[in-house]
Length: 252
Ligand code: F6R
Image (cartoon, rainbow, N blue to C red; front, side, top):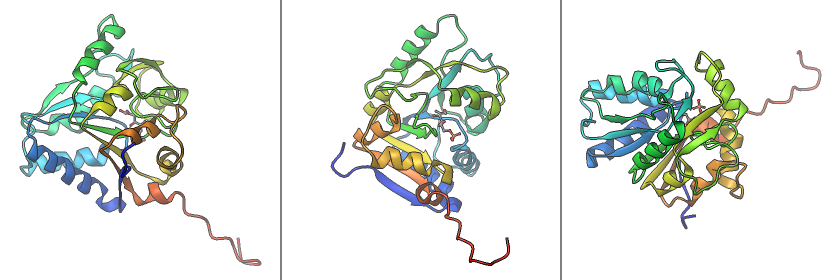
């Protein structure tokens, strides 16, 4: 763990997407050949909308940058709406002109282990890895039990991740496995950003940042990275608002 610990940026929800977009575009302006690994999920959706809108308004060009996909379900057919490549293309990449080079995860061949090895090579030497935080402490598909030196690999998904594919993202069937950039590659990157919004993430964020690191919460290993920034909105830090106890005798 770095001596200073993670940089924690707590932002009002209304400024969250614009602030993270500013930082990412500053990074892109300074480093046009940026190699950045991006997640899907709900958390980055407003960030991607902001980046797409900025691009239309002439933000720094993505033309020389490379976007590496963080993770992908195994077993979902090409074009499935839950596919991470489909979601990232729709939410961001297709709206950038000219687009960056995109490195998806090849789950459409017959050998997922070989696809994972190929993506492990693609995920070496990243400049920046952007992550969301799962309610069970996962980052990417590095589910509880993952270790800090894990490579990019084929993994069994936690039940909550399987359910998310159908319930939240509209997958045609329930995947049981996925390929994820491993914690080893994430920790090797030059910089790591963890995006966390909403009060429901407050407990797991506190667990990841404040309690001893451990396999029960893979995100806790991110604290080993010397350049970890957490972009949280206020709710993700404050947690649920305590309901004020009703005064005795007041109406229900
Ligand atoms: C998605 C991914 C996942 C999500 C995490 C949080 O590519 O890697 O680890 O980032 O499950 O998901 P949301 O943002 O939907 O709460």
